[in-house]
Amino acid sequence: MTDAIRQEAHGASLWHAVSRNRRDRPALHDGINVDLAIVGGGFSGLSTALHAAGKGLSVAVLEAEIVAWGATGRNAGFVVPNFAKMDPDSILAHLGPERGERLIDFAAGSAELVFGLIRRHGIDCDAVQNGWIQPAHSPAAFEKVKLRARQWARRGRPAVSLDWQDVEALTGVRGYAGGWMDRSGGVLNPVGYAHGLADAAETAGAKIFERTPVTSIDRAADGWTLKTPSGSVRAGKVLIATNAYGGSLNPLLQRTYIPLKVFQIATEPLPREIRTRLLPGGQGAGDTRRNLFTFRFDADNRLISGGMHILGAGADTRVPQTIWRRLAGHLDLPDLPSLAYGWSGMAAVEPDFLPHLLDLGPGLIAGRACNGRGIAMTTAMGKVLADWAAGTEARDLPLPFAPPAPIPFHALLRHAPNMLLGWSMLRDRLDEAR
Image 1 (cartoon, rainbow, N blue to C red):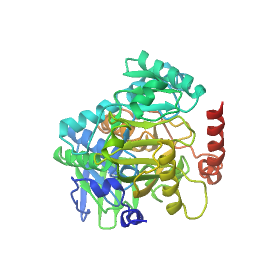
Image 2: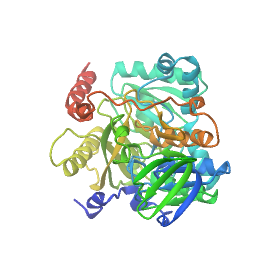
Image 3: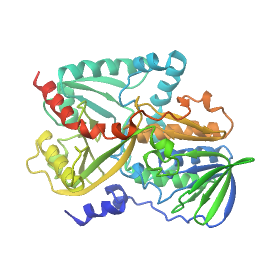
Image 4: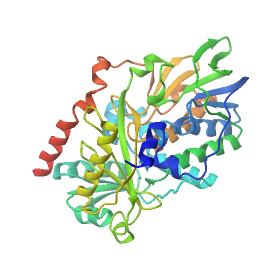
C-alpha cells in the first residue's frame, strides 16, 4: 500500500491530491445575518450558494471540514444526466404526468448545466463532455437499455442505442451485448469542479466558511439560528445539504436513506498505446451489472474504477485490491499498472433512487439528489433551490417534496446492499451465461 492510499484515512482522494485550484477558507468566528444559510460545502450546497447569490440573496455556507470533503470529493467524477434506476416512462407512472415531466426535464438538462457552469466560470477541472456510455452485460439488459435510449431520445435528448460493435469501438472492451450513450454526459475532476463552484459563489457574494461544524439549528422569530463552536448565523431560510455526512445534526434524516459505502481506485498512468485502445474518445462508462462496473481515465491517463464490498473486516485494504483485479480482468489488461490511489465515500440512496427535498419546518429543508448521479443532479438541485430561497414555494419545485419518512427497519436495511452483494454478483454471472 502506497503513501497515497494511506492518505484516505485523512480524507484524501486522487482528486484532492491533483486538483490545482484549492484555496483555504476561514472558519466562522462571529455572528452574521443572512437570507440563506447552507449546511454543507459539497455540490448541492455550493450550487445553491452560487445561484442564490446570483439572485441577490445574502448566503453563508458552513462546512464542517473543507470544501468537497464528503461524497463530493470521493466519487469517480461521472456526469450522468439520467436516473439510476427509473426511466422516463416509469417516472411518469410513479409521479403522474405533471410532476413526472417536470422531474424528467430537471434531469435531462443537468449535464448541460454542469458543463455550462464550467465554461462560464472558467473552472479548472479537466472536464470532458464527450458522452456517458452504459454497456449492457447481457442480451436481456441490452433490451432494457435500448428502451431507455428510445425514451430519452423521444424527449429530444442526445441518446443513442449502441450495438456490440459500437460498444467495443467506443470502450475497447469485448463481450458486451450492446449498450447506449447520452452524448451530453461526461467526466471531470469533482474536487476541482467543487473548488470552482466555491470560487464562483464567492465572486457572486456568498460567504463560505470551512472547519465550521453546525452544532444546532433552532427556530427563531424571523427564521433560524445556527450555532457553531465559534460563531452563529441568523438566517431566514436554511438548507441542509450534507447528504450522508450529516452526523447527528438531525437524527431523523439519517433514517430516511440507505447509507452506501463505495470504494474508488486509480492506477498509475497507463502506457499511451493501451490508453488509445480504451475509451479513446474520453467518455466514462458504467455498465448494467448489479455489481456495477465503471471505468474512466483522468487527465493523466490513470484508470479509475469503483465498487462495493461484502460486509467483513479489512475492507479498506481488501476492496481496492479486488477492484484493481476486476479492472485487469474485465479490460483484458494482464499488465495493468499498479494501484496508486484508493479511497471511499458514503452515498445517500433513497428507496426510489430519485432526488428528494425534505420538509423540516418553515423555511428549513434538506435536499438529497445523489443515488449514484451526484454531480449532475446536485448541481441542478442547487439551481432550483435558489428559486426556493428567493421565494418560490418548495411544492412548486420540480423535485418531490414531503416531510421526512423514516425507512421501516432501517437499522437492518441499511446493511442490505452489502449483505446482498454476493447474490447480486451471482445473478450477474447467470445473466452473462444465458
